[in-house]
Structures are given as structure tokens and as C-alpha cells.
Image (cartoon, rainbow, N blue to C red; front, side):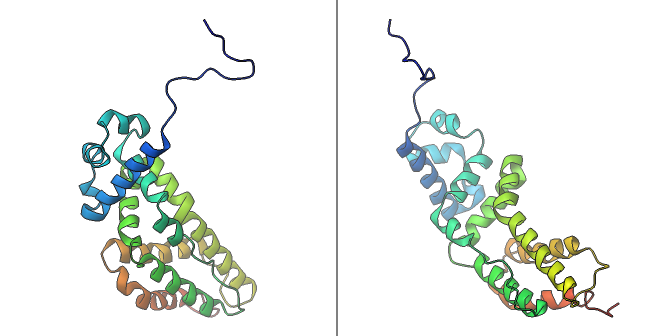
Length: 207
């Protein structure tokens, strides 16, 4: 009986096949593109990828986890994640309008909207996917927006007696609402108006 070489941990089971993993993820993305989140099932993914259903379940415990991984590892989503933080030109209103428009246009880019909708649905079903959605997408944008708002306060352009975290919540939530209600294509035009509405109560001397 052979012994495990010194310094190596014993192997447990067969190693995962990267080609099989990618085939499953690609099948998931194809199904998302054709029928959205509702069109994906573990059975359908297995059939599309040409593998057995147990092979899928050995790698992903649930549909939500599988969809989240398929979206986050897609080239289109990786490109769409790269949204610039709000610039600091010295004019907070100008900078936030530009940021909101870029964010809205990014969400409406071809191929991104179906993936974001699927990721949102997966997050609602899977706590782990929800954590990933916040860590990769919502959280960094929220923090960057709050930091820019505080810089506006420091410059005397915004009031300090308001919850800037709540303002960031509301602005990002409004932009995501456009996506979830199928109006992402028009949200870029609405984005600047949203910023104006939110900043109305933040200007020094405002209500």
C-alpha cells in the first residue's frame, strides 16, 4: 500500500474538472439569456451542459448560488462592474450628476441588464448571493458615494445635518428601481433629475 508523500495532504475524491465547471457556467448563462432567472433550473443546466444533474449539485448547492457564480464570472459582468467613483472637480452637484448618469448608462449596457436582474433574483433566494451582490456591486458604490457627499459637506456645498448614508441608499435604490422595472434604458436621462431632487434638501439654507 502506497503512502502519501511527506508534506502533501491526502487527496479527498477526484479533483474538479475546470472544463466541466466552465461548461456548466456557460450553460447557465445561455439559459439566462433565453429565459431569465425563471428559465434556469439545475436539470436544464445539466442537460444544456451535457452532464448529469449530480455533477451540477456537487459543485453548486442551489440554483441561486449557481446563477450568482455564472453572472459574476462572466466577461460582460466583469466589464460592467467597472463604474468610476464620483469625481471630485470641486463641484459636488456636477460630479454627482455625471456619476449617476454613468452608473445608469452602465446598467443599461447591452448584455448587462439580464445579468443584473438574474443576480438580483439569485440574491433574493440565496443569502450568500446577496452578500456577494453587496460586496461586489452595491457596497463599493455606496461607500464611494457617501465619501463624495462628505467631501461636499467639507467644502461647504452640502449640509452636515442630514444622513448622507440615507441619501446614498435612496439614490442607488432609485437607479436600481429603474433597472428592476424595465426602465433601465431611460434611467440615464432621469439620473440627473434624481440627483437634483435629492440634493435639493442638502444645499446650505435648504429646508
